[in-house]
Length: 248
Image 1 (cartoon, rainbow, N blue to C red):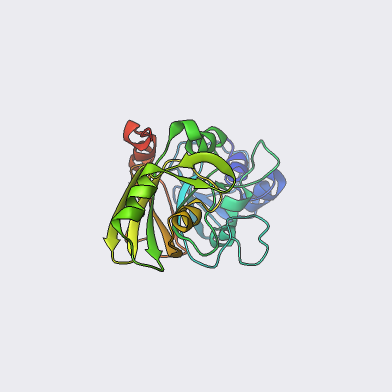
Image 2 (cartoon, helix red, strand yellow):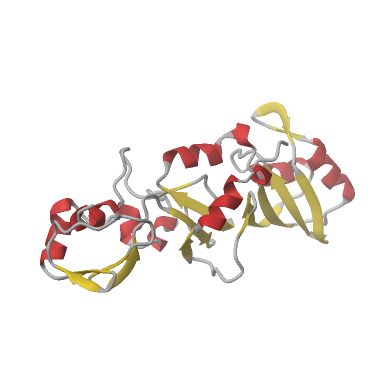
């Protein structure tokens, strides 16, 4: 693949801009300067290059995890709080896509006051697979509650509660108390404000909410709020494993 095309696919600008970056001496590939915008390289995942001193690696598809901080919105056009997309470098926001929207997209959304594991990608089929209700991808939440958690509340969450917009009960795939006013809740479907509404249905209230795991992939302890990193092959295997698609 021509180096100008490699830069274009990675979100470094239009083809003309990318050609100019190369011709002006702003690009190195595997540590070596490149000035010919038509020079060809094997576009393999992990190919290292720099653009204006910014180190990067080629990825045919982008798969990321982000530790979403509180006070951010999972929207390209936020209404009140900053967008989580501002936490990403511009190439990830500008990667060309076959659809109308550029860049990586969040797989599902977390409320502005919810923290934790957020996945982003530009792989449309992967987004569909992770979001599809029939795949039952479990998502684990650490919940801080206003009132003490009791056995009856846990029993009702496991048995199923009715939300005001759907007569069909929704239930937790797993639920356990982790403290007097804390519990760990596992869901395999994603409804609007589901955790908050389920807790309200059993007479409690969510005070803090943090997503710690999706499928078999856990949020790393060393990934601070606001930080992101690429998903590696092991991470993707955990998301695609049969254990990450447990039936409710």
